[in-house]
Length: 290
Length: 227
Image (tube, rainbow over all chains, first blue to last red):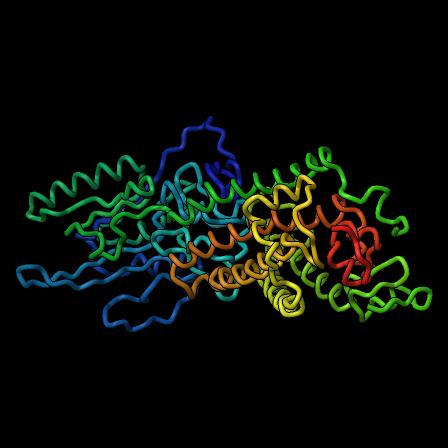
């Protein structure tokens, strides 16, 4: 890997990463407060600039949203949603969408290419395009529909949590650009603490359903999001994301059975040959027929 | 059936005629049958070496046989489609011989195990019940591979749930196939001497035919055997 300063905790289709455990690496996280986001899209621009992604043609989808979905060349998207409250008022919800950097990444679980998807010791989940084979399994494994495919390169691309900046002690580009402070970056523990205090504050202000989105189904994410109105689905977030059952059944049960069956079959025929020997007529098959 | 003892060479006869006695040999598979069989085998082998490294890194070394994992990922679906096409040809080519007879039932409920203990399970015609069962399993498997493979080939055009189900179907079909093909290769080579040449030279010896497929032997030779 190019990121030599960072140890790899887990790698796709590999037994283990390169983590020695000798050095303490704190888990990092991004903090997103949807209640103080003003939808300026500075983070979108900063992401495109830092990651050298070309400008994409925007699409008019009836809102301020730049694109309907994330793209292989657009890794950071503010989702704009309008909702009517029970009292008839309008809610204008904005949420920064990007890779959630799950502690239990479904993309990594589903990926068949050794080392193509890695989870660094600090929790960042990244893709190594030199090892990606473009099969699309990561997209099947991701509960957030984040991995996108680049038509020209045939490789998956997504937010790297600016691992290249983080490993030299800088904050991710989106955080750097945010003018309201609704984006923060630091150790996961601190970000969760910050999120919890903000949620408590919001509840005092009358946002009874305010919550911190750090889904347990994927063992938490390195993106913690304060949802002012609760209800993750209002923000186009899955309520209980987890690695899909099909992927787990496939990788953890069916495939091991298959591998054992493969070796057992070959071994079994050797044992069979030893026990029963060849089946042929007395005197062999080539003698003259009587 | 007519014999051509001393007149024609068995290999020459085996080009276009089946079930014919030539001297001490009987033609079991004419050339067309053998070409179709080996086309299926070749495309299966290509699918195997390009698919197994994607299946588990334990067989990642197989990817080097086709030039790396990226190449494996690219050629696997094409090899798979080729496998399906030749399997379809094979299906229609072999279908007339592949109907179960009355006494050929029960291979899944015990007969197969008794057969593997080299017990006499039936008075076999050209194909015994196990072979007919294998034929149908291969055809069904080819359909299963194709249908489950398409959403895996173009994952972004299908819903996630369907992709998950297809991956599981593809996997389970493969595991069954692996066991079946291993048995097929074992029985066709080491376990039953004299069989393999039926798929190379096209002929088997009279003694082989009389021993393994007595009913077919009687038909081909017109001889009466006991039982």
